[in-house]
Image (tube, rainbow, N blue to C red; front, side):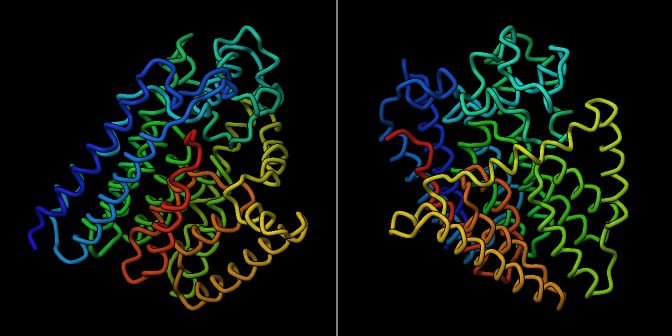
Amino acid sequence: MSPRAALAAGCSAAALVGLASALAWRDGSPLVPRDGGLAAQGSAWAFLALLVAAFCAYLAGLALLRRRALALRAAIAVAVAVQLVPLASPLLLSTDAWTYWGYGWIAAEGGGNPYVDPPSAFPESPAAGYVGADWRDTTSVYGPAFTLVSEPVARLAGSSHDAAAWIFKGLAAVCVLAATAAAARTSRRPALAAAFVGWNPVIAIHAGGGGHNDALVGALVAAAVASAAHRRAALGGSLWALATLVKWVPLVFFALAALADRARRRATGMIGLAVTAAAVGALATVHYGLDWIGAVGPLADNAVRQTSYALPSRLEDLGLPHGVALAVALALLAAGLVWLALDAHRGRARLGRAACLVLATTPYLVVWYLAWAVPLAAPEDDDRLARLGALALTAYLLPQTIPL
């Protein structure tokens, strides 16, 4: 079968993502969040149908690429189209980008500290009416590496909520493309790995469309894995540190990778991680005092919340008490991590499986977490379970946040 068929499938995914994104320009579109996400929304069945069609085209493209090779530059070109086309839409399905703007404004322009002062303490902020309603009374849950990035974005955006949204959307889209390139550089089948990440329409909608910072986490962890694969352990360790200083989850993956590296008598990148963490921590302490360490508090509060797509919620729907459902999820996570640690101790870090395990058991599961799970599964050429798990989670989470 000609590689043109795979290329056609990828181009179809890009076109369908473009059509879906264009629906956000209708007056009163339910795809665009309003009033901190509290405004009454209509239904978006047409958007869902187009996104499902795009996902099917993506799956077809991957199936075709498994049988016939495609030039890497062609796979990357399609990835660029898929990931950048949502930039032509308004902010989609979430207020998170405006919340980042709000926290950045507090530090950059408001004279406050986002780790001490919640957005509600700054009614004069241009972001005040746009910050997500659930976060208006919450100090920042993000690590200092991301807050330091959010400050110049807030200065650049000024008082424009549209500018703030598009800057974060653009950053997220570029990060997905960076993760695409890193996955291709790590894999023995680079075009397939690039398509696995870059042709994913669900990631595109929530990165280039929604501007979520999980795309930055995904780029950093994918680049860390690629650096380790090319024996650049110190750089890899630094990238792991930066990812962890955006959100803490990459520490789990670094621990498994370090165990596997030790088993194979390779450098673990621990020095790079320690030096970078110390440098960023020192900069953050000068800028925010030691209060940035307190981000763990609201983050822990967030971790015990549940979303309806998470395993504990599904178990409760089946009649299990809340505590029992959480205990089952925690037990599965613990057992899975022990199994993965034993594998890592034998020299195999199954980071794709680890990412899927974290998503499958976390009480707070949202669709944009795919932006770091999919890039970890993509380069694992001989681990079918990791790739199938990432695709299954993408299919499962596809409808989440779409108003129906």
